[in-house]
Length: 301
Ligand code: MN
Ligand code: MN
Image 1 (tube, rainbow, N blue to C red):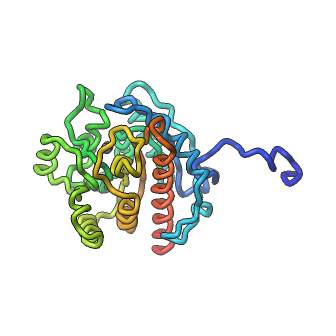
Image 2: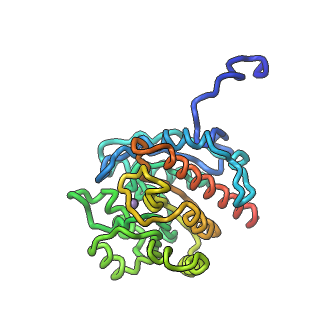
Image 3: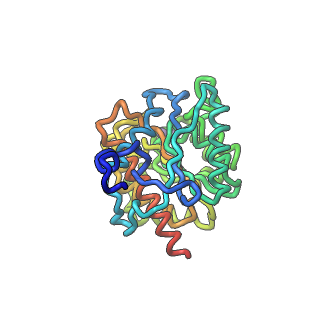
């Protein structure tokens, strides 16, 4: 009997995301770690992020005051980590296959990166009428980086080629090159820069975001954690000053999650540079996104 066994009383098992687990068949949210940092350009180590985020997720409160939803009550299954390879194209293909299976089983995939290039595999697994909402300091719209077309610095360019540039909305932009700006302008990539967010009252920014997302039926949400200011999230691959506060990010996510979010990823946490703060921020972002998505689902029914 469990109640009498010291094994069950005094030993916690290995740590799945949020500490709770539903069987895959019953789950609505399916967590997949992608320990992959093969194309990192500065501070590598994001392949250690899935484990760091899982650990943080077992050590913060699960109740969301923003939504009144408790992560503890959500049906979450943590699949574990993808077997990644040295080949960017093969890794992205494996992501596409696994995420595609999760989506066709009627569930919401939640990928823990890894670096940002993993989003290409996720986006390739969804239909082409979805919109990619990308929180990031960078545009990632270069045609390639150091000769690598599947670099994390080029992921949104590859996604633009796949799904159409007008289906990308970038929020928090503040670190760009001219090539990216020209591409975004010529190809109608929309977005709200960090400067716009800093200069305008929050209500205006939320209104602008609402306008940009009007009529978009399905959302693929990707959060590159460097969208936050390094003061909030110091341990990222390419830190960039003048970023968002956690509250601003969560308020913007609240607006995005009013729409039908069909897949989520969170990338670029590099735990060896962390005090623990970044992994906790990442967990908080994911918890709130899950609770907001669940709240919408309950309201829509
Ligand atoms: Mn990025
Ligand atoms: Mn970035």
